[in-house]
Image 1 (cartoon, protein in one colour):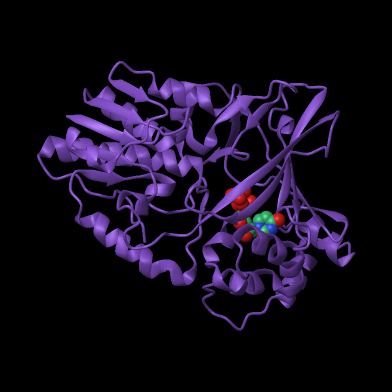
Image 2 (spheres, rainbow, N blue to C red):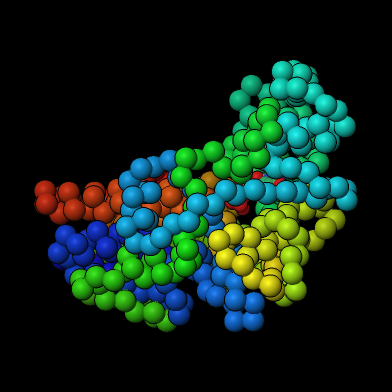
Length: 381
Ligand code: UDP
């Protein structure tokens, strides 16, 4: 069949590759002048540093087939991500670990003492935390929540944490030892030459035709037997029911001599500091050395119509609109919605690739069995 794919990020590229390898004719459109979507990387001319143009992306996974997949298309370099946070003029270790707890409370507790201490801080009147705030209060208590989560989260999401789902906080671990790796996954890496060449390699197949700087119009769907849409779910419907909320990011780059902050990511927990974090890109490639450095001050705000959508907000009371779009999408024929934007979910790269592989398998099975191809291969609720 002839398949149109909208978006040349990981979702579109992986589905496209799998379908092309199975002998289908694939045409991919992307409105930007590069592939890899928000994972796009490019070398900065002045400093020579590999820059994650849309903010840092650290590849981490425990999914074997995803790890094998990325390694097929590029060289992954071992990388152990660490993050620090500055709060009230002091630097603390993240994610919350024994050092963070001892630093904040100016103590020297051992793991057992700290566990009991934090259990004593926890406000446990809520059984099943639904919001970010309830989850945090139950998990770590008010003092830790206010120091490390409240200000950062309000800046990042633009709303009170009491309006955010608990799932966002569940991304972060709490450790009672001095382990300060940001992620727990067994595979953690950054591609030697950035993400863009990996996506280019995935797309490098004779069955794939790529059109950059080309906006796909939904009216073109008739040119294809099937369309894979990795653009915003509401965008497919021309935003007919209203707009789903997204946060967008503004990056303020600056270049300096030497080492700016000595670490890849410094978060700023205080609400009064206008940026959420400063990222220093040369520290994402510790196998390289550069005399100069480029840093991004990162600001978060609500996405307007022309902004690049980054994070789906999914406020607890946003779900009605989302449900309406899901219902419309499920009724559509000959289109499948994939990826972070297509399913309106906060997705890491590894999950994105895994889901794209699952979608491609599902499409191929449906075609082989002569069944209609589903609109979703995940539950977008
Ligand atoms: N978070 C926080 N303080 C921090 C770091 C994270 O409150 O110092 C919260 C914040 O709400 C953030 C969420 O935890 O959106 C997930 O953090 P993660 O580092 O996974 O965010 P990402 O790097 O994906 O933006």
